[in-house]
Length: 330
Ligand code: PBG
Ligand code: ZN
Image (cartoon, rainbow, N blue to C red; front, top):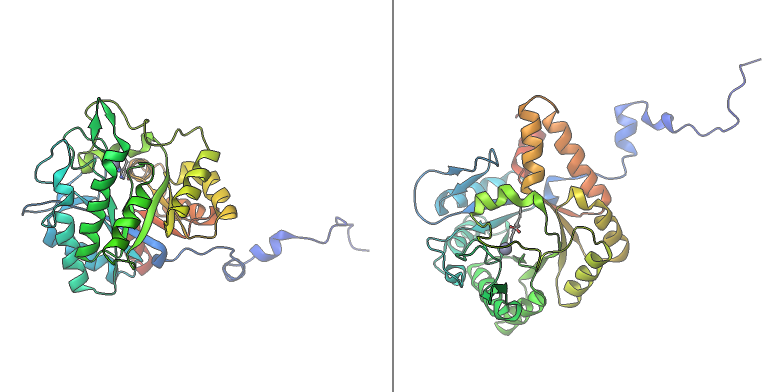
């Protein structure tokens, strides 16, 4: 008589016995097509400038940014997203709405080289304002409604240059409605809006602010970005942005917000995106540089978890690296 086994016939390990079985029953698979690659573009010539706290991330001239975007599209990545830097900063962030700025030029160059490549742009003033806030100041506070026309004009400039998607990240109330109305008034019905809908006032953005030279010179962003203690508020923000016409809603930062992604996935049918932000990237880089973690394995696990939680699309500085890993060369 065989040894008495458990009465329960279920053995989850059966489907874990080989790589082929595990691959066969995998519940989620993240593909390069779902990734969005951020690119910092600056005015002027010269070689790419490194960002110390974001190893591997550069600030590119327009021509180099177009080359980088083209390479990213050729890698098979889903989209590129441009962040711009101005020649001069002023209190209103005027260069943000200039058709001759670095971002519109990079958009035109990329769409000329790869008409089918998806080009997204960040729409916010913080890299362009002398004070570093995401909107215009009045009496020391960001004036929501005075900022809206500027964001709308910025989105329009990007759309006219050929951007497929504009991504407002200022966390101004009604920014999506203002942008959608401005685009539609110009007949730009096809330009989509990817809203940074649930964006927390996070400490994980530090390295980005070095890259974009966008740290607020006074105060912080807690008057417009969300309090990390709140989850229901994130769902309200997403609902509002979708009502205002957003086509895609983004949650940010990604790994600290997996609960938000999961709840948003259950509640909304629109595509959801997540931003693996600069601090998430920098932490992995720093630990990997010390040999404390396996970089590729941790990146795949992190992005996989963000996808599993509910993100259809992921914005990540690792996008091109992942493409290289997939090709089997580091
Ligand atoms: C601001 C903006 C931020 C990021 C992108 N756009 C954050 C901020 O400075 O508040 C952060 C992205 C990152 O950390 O990678 N509009
Ligand atoms: Zn901003």
